[in-house]
Image (cartoon, rainbow, N blue to C red; front, top):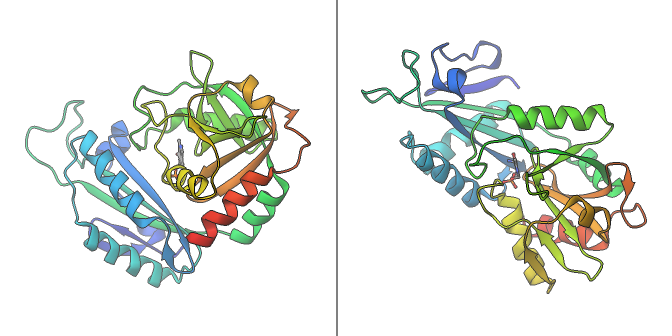
Length: 281
Ligand code: PMP
């Protein structure tokens, strides 16, 4: 991409920079949000803006811009980069201050960074039609995964482990033996009895905006749903499995730890939910 936005200014992507004392860089003291852009429209805009406000509130970082002001900047960023299909990334850190763990005593201005990236949704469709492999890994994250912070090292290591195993995503397993979520996606299964399961929105997972939308779609389709944690064994024995996120929508999972799920083909409910979500988006 040619342009980014940093602290009130559009600049060439290659020249965009923040200070080395930025608390996002020093302590991961920052939150972020990601919107998919489809046909020049932000998908699920409301959900992602409300989650952003919640993440900032949880960390007591003041909101540096109103939503309409942010929307104007995002719109201009997409225009300057001629982006019609892809994603917008927003990061807000507490700001820049002399390095000290505690919050600065005098108020500082939060740092705002916006970038965008083109995505090939046609290739993503092909991937959804084939289904993907996932592995399971121990969940090594902190106790507030519901806050969308840039503290993503365990997620980075989990995704890398997945790739090295020839898989696309890693489903993280908590100390009690239950799957929490993927490294950048929420996890779902359909039981043999046809019930849709996804973990309850507790502090152990990010409250995915796509997850919430898929719960609504499932209700409209009259599916039976339960929000509860499930184990890797339940997932291996499931009739279907899939994952959700803003950029992958609904993507069927056809194997877990090299164990083929059902007949190894994307499940019918996953495909129906993907269609229903995209038809409404
Ligand atoms: N879990 C994690 C850990 C994530 O990083 C993401 C992507 N932001 C998701 C779930 C999916 O959330 P959403 O549907 O809001 O993209």
